[in-house]
Length: 187
Image (cartoon, rainbow, N blue to C red):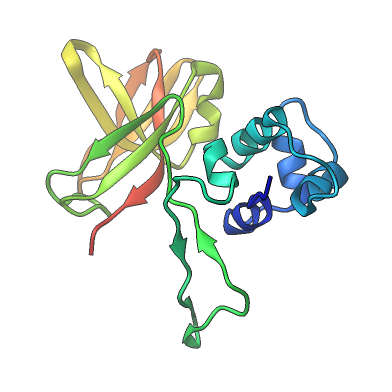
């Protein structure tokens, strides 16, 4: 079976060690390297483990799969747009387990009307990972609060709204929160 593990890993900006540590259970970078080069046979189990570690579907790792891909035409940097030194691809994002979306209806803060925010839900024990990030918090009666999580004191979260001049709000013991992890914007 011909795989695209190396292409996808590089497109994600991950090292062999990164992938090895994210596998469940973790493995060695050497094993991932052997699977990439074909010196070790890739089983369906390995394909699924590596796909999960890379945050893609297993079909994205198999040549001839039905997954879409975008070829990198240029790399933009301080010196302008340059042709890539090596051929590369970008793997389109796929929704992950526990993700929710926020659609921006009107410009607010750094966000423009039409933007989509992909958010990863967190359990209360993981709220510290969202400090100084934009979060969505459920409120009673089907309402939500969206803003920057600026502090966490035990079970109270302090949220700074995105609107200019907005007042800080305190939320006690929300059942979950979702931290913005990806911005999708049409130009």
